[in-house]
Picture (cartoon, rainbow, N blue to C red):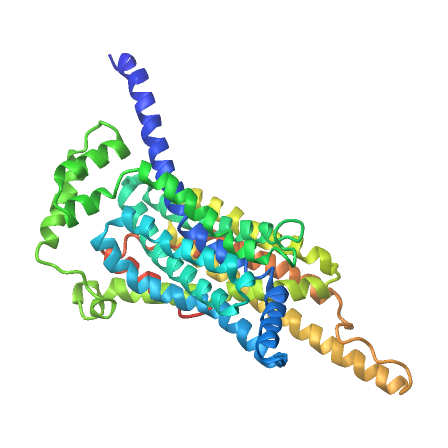
Length: 446
């Protein structure tokens, strides 16, 4: 009898697996993928946007901008992205409860569309302010989606796959970073004339999400607990799990619904006053702060200059930089498989320990490099006063640059295996804890 039933059940199981996979991809492409993509595409057109800002100011006033003001304008363009992310994180909680997880992700693409329009027409309009506003809007979109995506996926995935599904957020972030680096190549949209299209290309992931997300069900937890619709919850569970025994999962949701009766959504600062949640909230703050302060963004910031000083031709540095993003993507995929077997704690401790090791070696290597430059400078100055002094990047310890390059890749690999994919789905009730977790991602600009 079991042999007769098995062939008929197998296609259903495959269909449910495809729906869950589509749910993960539809939420991720407009969620953490969009975050990583917009984080990396701004690097390629740096000089082009600075030139455009200077030319625009000169056309308006008749005088060019001083270098320090050009740098200030560029810093504003870059930093408005994390500022928008902080605003988006504040919006995510109310949106998730009012509109639902899926509708919030769909409505969130309004910010992306508006930002893409501003980016695309900024050059024709001769307005660098449009770039600033676009960066703010795309940051708001990233802040909303980075909170709601793990919430939606965590509530849609079965318990046995919840850890791996949560790690998919890190995969999409790393994939977005790599895709942004690839699209920003000079051969594609990194051309001096194509930077408005490069910035406006954030519209493509948004359109893909708008086309695919309506095909998947809403979060079963939201349908039952927030909407009180048992039939819709059961229908969503059937689409995600199949027609098997859903009584136990439905019973757990009913118990959670009874526990939430009369409870209102808490603001982030109110979580610290709740005695039952204090330990979990403290864990969130510690883990979130550690992720922000671990120095992974610092490695990306130093990568290009270290590659150039190590002898990589300037025209080839962009390809070496793609390697850094590819390392994080590779380890995010590995950690997605390893998290269910090894657990989050082992991956976190191992990842941070390795990062501390590589960061220390990286610092020592750079200090030796600077010391070698100073020593070479003094030796040549003593030998002769007429000979040209060595260039600043010539050092008596040239091997330290290769060590620094190795540490960059090793540190990014260590980040990807553990800290990079951390989403604490099990620490607190989803809407409250994940919104607080999202707030912690934005105070430190990338």
